[in-house]
Image (cartoon, rainbow, N blue to C red; front, side, top):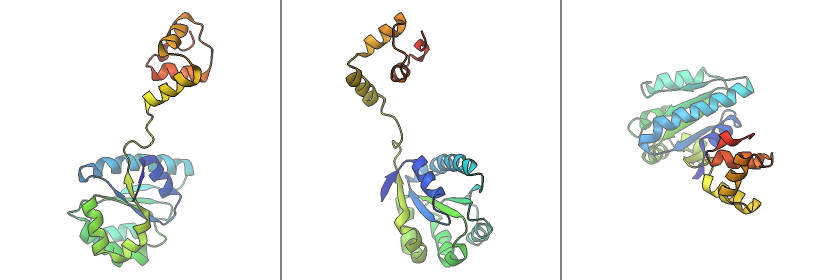
Length: 194
């Protein structure tokens, strides 16, 4: 199971028409991960200009969920946040109706490790369909390591933070995007353009 950031997962989902995948997170993070993924997917779909994103809550019965999914287009994305408590009937229904959903919306099941084990055990056809696309969300993926970047800037330019700040305050700092980034990372963006 590979680790991805939410943005990368959204990109992969949008690049795979009709494909389904499973995202594994801590049980307590299912709803928050679903919201973050929904935001990323909406952004991506707006760029494409076609399709929609729909989150299916646990209040759907399995047959009603399958009916709703079957009405969606291949450009749409269905997000199914499923706790381990409710994944069995839903996964069985998706397993049974897999052929009916083929070529329909792209789908992402967001669940926990326990939910993943139940999905694999209770829905073998669905599991064979999504098994190669099981992802773990890396909460740090795509986040800038500010200290590492500042260290790289210091080393690359042979200057200290204090020297950069002193030059910026004196108005002698070269107009260079690298120095602009440096000031922003130091929390001193107000010194830009002095």
